[in-house]
Image (cartoon, rainbow, N blue to C red; front, side, top):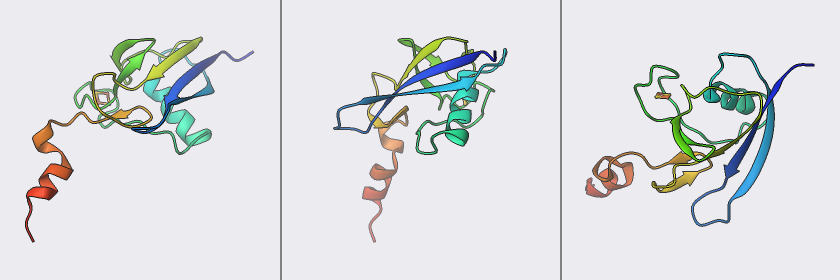
Length: 118
Ligand code: FES
């Protein structure tokens, strides 16, 4: 039997009651949580929102989220053959699913756009 990892993911957008989605992915030793999330989005749910850029260079910090209550980089946290609970950062404004607003306030697009006069 092929081992699986189960990802229990908190879903939702700002201002709505969150829901939980459970996905099973094939477990392969050495994979990251981000690998599992990418597989879910490709094979099971293209609407799942999460963010990443450098994939595993630990340089962009865009993949930060909570796994089993601990803040981690999803690209370096190891996927494990058990149920893992994934949540967005708790101290940042939620955008959607696992995506939070991590840009400094003066670098956010809405603030930049409001400063541009036409
Ligand atoms: S994807 Fe860049 S630090 Fe994780």
